[in-house]
Length: 474
Image 1 (cartoon, rainbow, N blue to C red):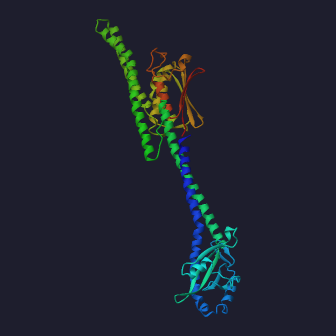
Image 2 (image 1 turned 180 degrees about the vertical axis):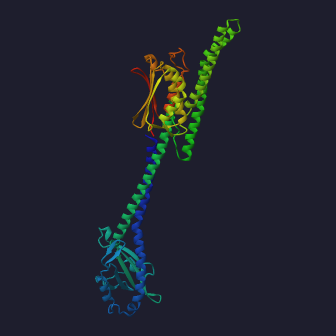
Image 3 (image 1 turned 90 degrees about the horizontal axis):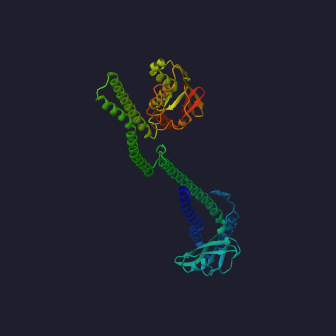
């Protein structure tokens, strides 16, 4: 299972369980919280009524006063109130008054007058000087039919002469409880969903960064050219930089060893030729023969210089993981500049050069490397084009790339050599001199093409050889 999915599952489990626990706890606390608030209001109401009713109860004129009529009118009122989205259409307080023995003197519902309520907790406890309250179901089988009763003592001095109880059905509180639970449920689900979304994005970002590092490490292990992924975040960025540093040190060590071995091998031949010619020059010989040996020494010295320079250029390109700049390069201007530099050689061989490049052919890349690469291709083409032959530059669009083609008239490349032309130090004899080059030019061009995300192709066509170099379009 991918690391990102495992991180998300752990986060999902943690957030889900924590959210469910908090949400369920708060949901369970809503009902008692609303009832506790209501009970506190009933306490205030009962004590207010106890003070209002004191004189009537003390004089024994409670039933003869206007209070029964007022309570009856109160019961018929229709408030039509909108309370936080809940429509209240009727009053639902029940009020009853008992004497010091617990006998009901007045009942707003009119059903309990004359009954003995001294055994009900609200009356019983209040008559004993304690806080009196009870919750009783009107229907024993229905939990939602419970009614909350809160009582307050009616006093004459310090003597309790009666009790007033105020009742409110819990069913009347249910709409507010359900509304709060619904809102809390939506809010809780939204917060949990938001938390999971953030966790998912975090897991995706973290796993994506790790995938980039994994792909980079895989490319390094396969010896491929790859740019260090751009990562944000302290630890991930430090890890990426550490991998890059390790790669640079390991590749640098291996490359130096390979470079030294290769250079040592390639220097043997020209050094042996120089040494042999020098030994022969110590002997007496005709002047013509001496000039020939001196020319050999000069030629091998020039070959050594070319070999070292091209090896240094190739080493610089091979060690790079990306371009130092990306600018728009006009291929027509670049080709014409290179042809002007080779004008003397082209004129001496009587070559016909055709440049079928539009001024709109522009590629995105590093100008210096592109110039060196095209210079190597032109140099190769000039070496293999016979006198009075044809050189032709052309370009065609292919998706997001331009394909630059260089055709040179001349002999076809042998089949056995086609697959090896870009190998380091592999070269074919030049038709004019029979000598081989350093064998580094096409390898250099291939590395430059890879740095630009392009490709180098070499093949035989009718009448000669065509080299195509694909490069990104502007």
